Image (tube, rainbow, N blue to C red):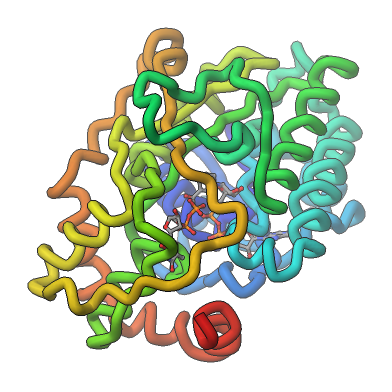
Length: 344
Ligand code: NAD
Ligand code: TYD
């Protein structure tokens, strides 16, 4: 692998992934293709400016002409570009199906035209989500998502991701397209857009504001540190078997109430900072990942996700980087925040 194209590299996971790969693969060049939507931010990779192995291109994965020109000497693609927030998909699903489905199919077609095929030495990684599997019951702790759990996407976001997974599967099955799919649980860490629950709650509290907890707060997520995720993505990109799906989880299930209490404790705030608000429509109850396949077959292990230390260092990052999130929270975000929480 000499030249990697990362899509969505100016977003949360993408920027962490670009930095992770630059650090761990010193012989590799990276082109970062990102449309810079509301969640894409070049400040996330300011430290790489001027680095000769790194190039940023502002553009859309739906732009076939641009893709054809970029893919000429690329031998690997890590596809992370997507619309990624469930609540926004409930307000307006159009951008999700455009970016996640049409965008992925356009990228697959362009890669095939550029010679991506089994035996070519080229490799494609499609980054998906555990949300395609739907929801698990709270009372059945023995049940986890495995790679053969049926796809039962419940939100417009999850439906668009599931559709994109199937586009990749079809390309692999029909054309021997050299692809792997990963499905990971909820990520946390530095540079996450403060619409997702952890950076939203931490930055609200840093501003002395309450945190909006949906419904009864008992919904469960399996929290994975973004650098553990990046490590898994690079592992699958380099060593995954074509046609395979790999689940990636932090083995770190927490209810939203437990998460909120821990954040409050770390930040020295009391429970009066919790503002219970109306639940999200169709709110998935529990996500929990069985990641034994990637551990067994590819030797990956999460080593950075353990709480409370990983959550403490994440809170500290937002406390130390106020200028970053204050800029991110201004502008378009204020309109979204009012619409999402104003009447709740
Ligand atoms: P993000 O919203 O922070 O970043 C998405 C990036 O994609 C942004 O930089 C945006 O500008 C870019 N983008 C969007 N549409 C584009 C288009 N049409 N062309 C080019 N670029 C475009 O999201 P994230 O949290 O970093 O998620 C990255 C990937 O990981 C997504 O595919 C998401 O579905 C998946 N994922 C995320 C999580 C999580 O917890 N954050 C969990 C599971 C899976
Ligand atoms: P989120 O970060 O949006 O990720 P996802 O919906 O993809 O899992 O939400 C994580 C959990 O936190 C989810 O159960 C919804 C809940 N939540 C709140 O209680 N309040 C909020 O303001 C947000 C954004 C999320």
